[in-house]
Length: 401
Image 1 (cartoon, rainbow, N blue to C red):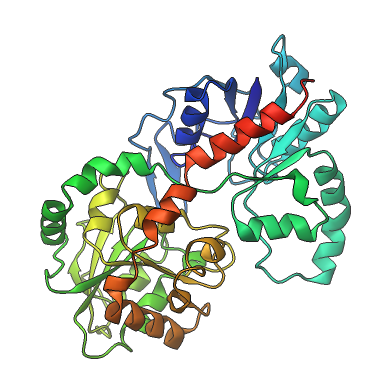
Image 2 (cartoon, rainbow, N blue to C red):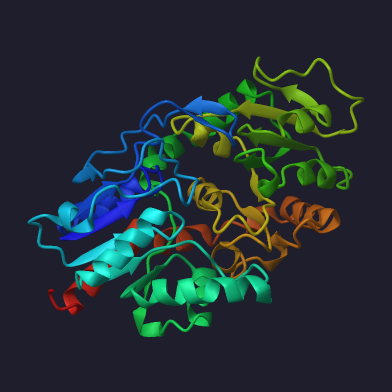
């Protein structure tokens, strides 16, 4: 059996657990919290929600005992309150899989697993794109040397994540490809009706039928850099473009004040705005759940992801590809070496460079019909089946403990 520890049920991860279980690999997923299952407030989205998907179907799971008021976004405030030995009980465990090191609970698990002589598999997100600062590297050196020293296999999500491990002395033979991906199958039913959906979705959000629509999907926070999209769109003359902002967050008012709003939900206050400085029309959907997200992608022509280094991957790019549209990403986003660079270099722009983003947007406008031929190839590699296959091969080559 493999015991998989993760902070909470996540809509991008739970289909992987189901796929592994369907392959007859014996797993149990142990969640540290119920975040995402119950209605809860998300500070970055600025709203309360729970995902409207069944996140617990198709695999064995349980919940660990952790500290009261545990926070999935806090290192010290997510701690195990029981021993790993008591969790394992009478299970025959071949390996323990942890989803990173951003919570103290993961460090507790790694240390105790090493004492119990149980192999540990690590699947984290950190990449090598962010500049290194000597003072910070010195502080981190010993803790990470000890932590990585307890790991048997490193399940890397993409090229930049793999390079992060290689730069820290992890040998290639201990690296296993477990790509970051989404549940492409879930979107297939929507795509069958894509032409009709595109018309109705554009009407719903007041997107002109003859416009080229760029979509931003995510939290309106500094890390995601949504404001730069408004600035860059001003520099694209002689094209009828539209911007669709899907999500919510602390920068909502800043976006509203600078936008020529074509549509916004009732709770988006737009009456007390500054003078409009944006000639491009903009629609805001507000936060939308998983059952409606396909409509937004189908209504659009190209995704924009201008995030900083905090975007260790960017699964919205996978989502865009699943819906047949290309993506423009900054050179700080963790997914660009895998999902964009090998196919269309001009769709990568220099982070926080307004002129370079507008250049990439213009390139997408003028070459749109030639930017989607690689999507099927990407979707066939960056999927759950790749991880299941590689995990199965790993188990078959690993002696039973």
